Length: 469
Ligand SMILES: *Cc1c(COP(=O)(O)O)cnc(C)c1O
Image (tube, rainbow, N blue to C red; front, side, top):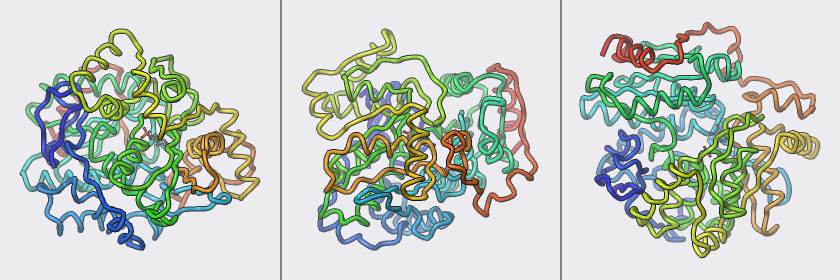
């Protein structure tokens, strides 16, 4: 399988190189040159497979040529073996034909474990084969950091540096990062906000001299391997609900358009999906595009669903690429004008075509809390605020009651106690057994000034299993 850049100017890469790449050299994102397509009979024959075996069948074409089948199978069995639920991604029914796909049974209680548990193992496998070491520098507002550290903690050939804004992540989220120890794990609290952290990561990718030749790898969802891993659970959910003979719809709480883009790919790979609902919070650039064909940056608002607090959706470029007939030059021009002027619309026919599949809704904090309370009263299920936004959007935007509606349950409610308290359901939140003593555990974290040179000096001093690069 070969991968090409959405902006058409960077060299095509194989899977191994795309795994180790960040942005393409032309500023674009990597996508498969040709998407694999499965027949209905083939998909139907996967019914009842354990999650890791289904994962092998869905993802195999993407890694062909880079990872032999037997090795890939073993990696997947290990990856999904660490999830605490036998079904890995169980479906829970809320109402007639309405389901939550619970994606929070991994080590850090959010869906990001599906991709980052795999990414860590793939990196270790590929780097060992090549005899190379890499450094990861990632910024997090909460969920990505802990999932990335959990995914990479056993990696022999990776040093991971996670920057979070000092005193601006929830205590559960902070402790999920800072209580994991290892000579290759480095938590850095920056005296600044999330954007400051992200800017430092971007600047480090742009000028890597401080790494003295060590390669820098991305763990945010611009990394193709993360998207690839998320395609699997769309197949998994559909097969539980009568697919592929029957079509299924999905509502996806979305920030960077990574998770929902995986659903779009599943459909293009042959899975019958009737409708994809983009569910955003008040940071609604994607909703404004889907409802009014305006992709325009606005100010950032802090919400009760912080993992979706974004101004611009990085993966949306991957959809725009397809919308423009995979014309890299056209896309480069569009993204450049976005950078200069702050907004665009696409040609009407392209937008209308996209809307055949996608609907959208923006949900504010008050509605989020109302939905948590409503679902708790109706079912006794406690939703996290992101999942609640997905449920609200599903109920507002649903096209057909005959088609099963699956809401992606992106996090466990215990990660976001503020929203649950505000919803007033009065149910005590309990950490699952593997995290029961989280608040008693020792923490390790270095607080650094909001200064690029200081952070880069720290990385060069500790980037080789805690020793200088
Ligand atoms: C990351 C995250 C999201 C948004 O995912 P995208 O792939 O950026 O759309 C939604 N909910 C939770 C809990 C998350 O951690």
